[in-house]
Amino acid sequence: MVSIKQNLSIVKDKIDNAAKSVSRSEHEITLLAVTKTVDVDIINEAIEYGIEDVGENKPQELARKYQAIGDKVRWHQIGTLQTNKVKYIIDKAYMIHSLDRIALCEEIQKRAEKIDKTINCLVQVNISEEESKHGLLKEDVIDFIKIVSKDYSNIKIKGLMTMAPFSDNKEDVRKVFKGLKDLSLEIEKLKIQNVSMETLSMGMSNDYEIAIEEGSTMVRVGTSIFGKRDYTKI
Ligand SMILES: *Cc1c(COP(=O)(O)O)cnc(C)c1O
Image (tube, rainbow, N blue to C red; front, side, top):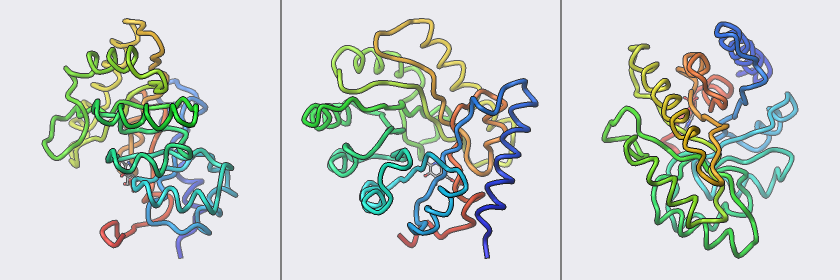
């Protein structure tokens, strides 16, 4: 039996320690519980123990769980978002972590406008330049953000998101997180209207401590809270 309470306490301690090790406050870091494949009653248990932000990577799954749990937590759409699925989450998601192309901005803008909502988005960046990874290449990010700022008034860019390579080499992983942080500082300096860089969504079960050391403000943790799940089943 997995103890959610115990797992959460371990993860929170590790977040605190990683933050302290680089003289940051643990309050700067939001723990986003990744609840894909996790049942509603287990999610409710995590909420009882203090979770306020949950992340799903399948829009229909987010919508289904939202019906059961509602607004007592903030819902985050993480992972690739197909344009034809925006409709499932537009009125439910607090933040979309995977803004990575203009076609998606078009769809989000159209749907958000209809319900008079401004939606928080993070631009997903493929820092490691692995072909398997989604997200914009680093050199395309600034132009993209300028376009969003100018043309999509119902999209509010709040920061950046990345995924580290699956690697045992911690220095490779660290380089990716540092790359995202550096890019965010560069963008901040440009003072682009309606764009902030307050959120850096980086770090998962395997690497969230390194991400925090490199400036993450939001870690997306699934396995370390809920145990190993078979992601291929759903
Ligand atoms: C599944 C997932 C996570 C969480 O991964 P764990 O290794 O289970 O912590 C984080 N981010 C994204 C985009 C995911 O799809």
